[in-house]
Length: 230
Image 1 (tube, one colour):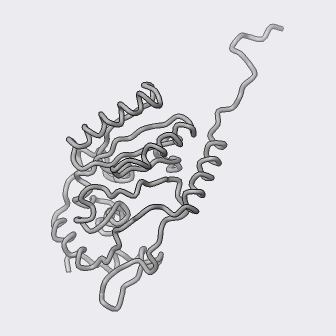
Image 2 (spheres, rainbow, N blue to C red):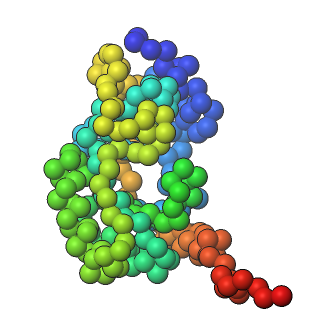
Image 3 (spheres, rainbow, N blue to C red):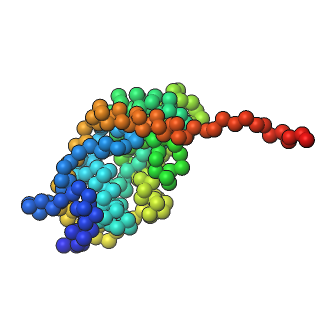
């Protein structure tokens, strides 16, 4: 084998994954993530099913298979339009819009410490050209429904990858990466269907948003900038 898969995947084997009697590596009990700050549209990212995975599996490749030195080849052509809402009301408005879209997307609380913003919404695309078209669509909707001052931009791949690899335009394939990924296809038995989030999980997400909004309110101040007279 090209790498020691047992050693590489040991962290997963200690956290809900298992080596089956058929030699496949799979989640012991496939389930929906429940403690999440995101509402997900159930539409899959284009091409991900044919690639045999989703963002979860491809992130495992980055963290464990490639030891944070590379990303899955599928992610090389992943682009996303990012919207930065400025209030909980805007987040709810985006959630209502995304619920009826036929594109892969999500919206929620940015609890990740390295994003440096409170809220975020993402629209996933394949290739930069599709990303540019999606940007036009999202920018137009944001202008009409949230305001032209709301930031919208197009980026490549995940911010988590940039934390380890630097600027996304400099991402490169690793030696033997295609062969390693082909080997991985014979090892992983991964359920790629995500479906719709269960209603109790959605309710939990809304409560997370309420708590997050309370924690990130700007304080009301009671002073001005004039010097105090003695």
